Length: 184
Image (tube, rainbow, N blue to C red; front, side):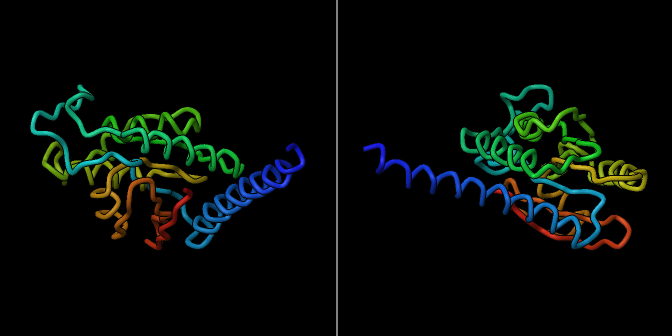
């Protein structure tokens, strides 16, 4: 019985190594491809569309939130980033609960909320004010690569890219070049 398990265990170890190496390559290659100074990430899976009518920024129970799959996706993505050895200079999150939970579950270290990443999709944040705040933040970036966990509408407004839950866009704020990628 044990002899039958050894090839299976060896296969699983090889697969795990392959996924980690692939994630590292995806992250590093995307950043290098555009000489990115920021990486935008759309929050992980939060089923539904928009937020409920009774939305309140201060009450997660009134928001569309991550489901079990989204929580696992965030944990897996965080593990892939940590195993890659890459470290972001700064990490910011939208004030929406699904973004904060995604950021927290990735366990990448210290992070802060930033209202310039909030969704203006349903008018819960002002589009112009939000994008002005974000523009100032992007102009102030200095060295390293910053991770920003946010919403599809923000990523599209800044980079022109449409991304799914848990997808990334490596972005160069000077050249406006971008590269969409996944780690899961």
